[in-house]
Image 1: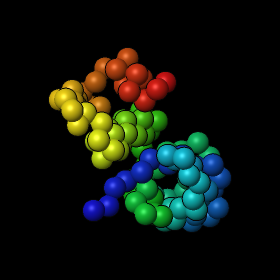
Image 2: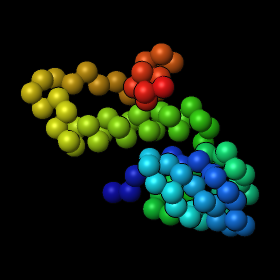
Image 3: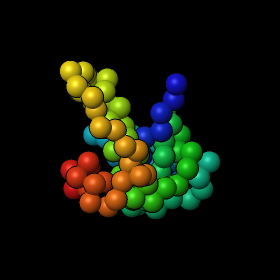
Length: 100
């Protein structure tokens, strides 16, 4: 299974970009999304950008990934987890979920 990671462009380098996301910095191939600029958000699979996204969508995907990581690490193993998709949350709930 391949999971998309939101990454923000730090520096464009032709068909590549230096990007940061989820605690790591990587060189990402950008041919599928075209020209990018510093500050752009991309949805990255392995080392290829597959989609341009906005900051809100990046926060939503990161929040969903945080929920998955929590489940994988046993969060809620002793009790029911109140799970809602980030796309169903209001702005305040999303900010709380992402720690903003």
